[in-house]
Length: 490
Image (cartoon, rainbow, N blue to C red; front, side, top):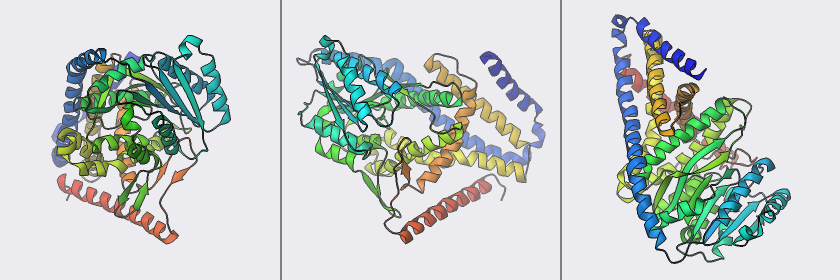
């Protein structure tokens, strides 16, 4: 059935291309040139990242790992591993295997381990303690469990309190802290595979590859699989520069003396930016962006380990796939854009040109992504309708080729839903980014009822909302004018 889907997909591309009378496309020349130019730019950037990722995976990372593991083997004292885990409103069927994986990884730590579990509900407290007591006594001997039951004051406060508990134990330069979400399982050899990275004194943290476990098959699971495949390529490309673009909250590992620094803890607890129109925007979500920015501005590098993987247990937050994707993208892209501006201010000399350019591309890609379909729709409506099937063939062909490249990295044939989901993620993602860009003060957790929006006064709040709508509409207006000029509609 999968092979039939690929054959049918490719057949549609051929049918579209052979049915278009090319001699009638002259009037759409402007639109085709614009699409071609944008395509060269966007697909060229993708090719750069894919090439860098391939070199990193095949050459750079294996060489670095051999060097660092040799240095780690010469260390006289093994590191102590701290596991900082946050759990809130997670099904017990997920909590149990997650903590079992954490306890196994803690037991395998050669220098001993401390697990700090931050929970809100008493049932989670009892379950975690029971799981710990069920461990074999020899495995439990080198592991200390601390369960910190707190009020539901938010994930940032939970992380900060856990880090203060770890800080009180005076972790050393050689120790590590693994930040783990309560719905993510970790590999048993996590400490052995990540601790050698910190033999390089310039590295402050590392993040790993990710897999997803979703019970129900369908578009939501395919979409997550596709996103993680794309993430693997981008992380590998950024890993070549030793500065990834995020330290994923699901599972990342930090040098213990840095993550227990008081200024690091303070930024996790209460991070914010000053916006020219919205005033002070306090961060409710995006703790992983705060930890990333602290290391970035303090000059530390961040590694990517493609040969270590965590598994996150995800569930669809809304009934429909589209609604679920939009609510998740709103949170993810909001976190990204709230930190994007201050990261650019650091400058290419401080964070490296490729990292700085990649951060800039997060913002410019919003408009280059939307310019293409906007120009095609305007051309189809006002000049030549036949440009539409030509564009559809172009989109189907290029997205299929990109998904084929992803399948080479993952080593398996992709489902035929991938090209459609890829285009959906690009267009809808760009629309969500554009919406959030003008409303950085709106943020909400997926599982929590709490949300944040700066509104010191009703009048000021209404003004900010109106100005967000106005600037968003004005920007789209200028995008339309620019596209119409470049495509020679005007």
